[in-house]
Image 1: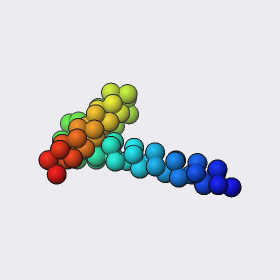
Image 2 (image 1 turned 45 degrees about the vertical axis):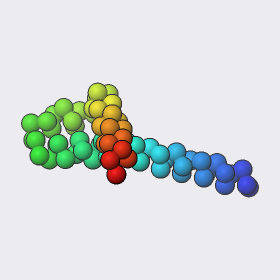
Image 3 (image 1 turned 45 degrees about the horizontal axis):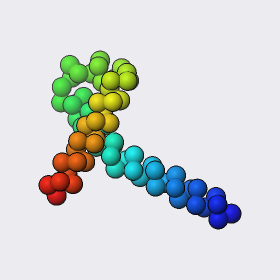
Image 4 (image 1 turned 90 degrees about the vertical axis):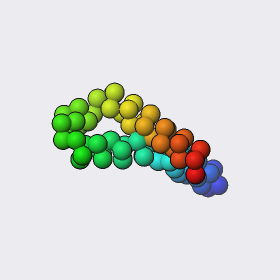
Amino acid sequence: MPEATAAIDRLFSHIGTVLRYFAPGFAALFVVLVVFPGSRPFLLSGSPPVVVLGMVLGLTIYGVHTEFA
């Protein structure tokens, strides 16, 4: 049973890391989607460039936040 608890702890740790680094990027893409309706077809396509853009934006936002906070 301790192995299962350790595995669950690691899983939640990884989920937290993903949310910390990537969620701000996808939130920024959502803001762009709302503010600029012309971006809707591209952002809602779910294509790999959109996913990569969200991840890179998230890493950039997190990096700037931690550098200047």
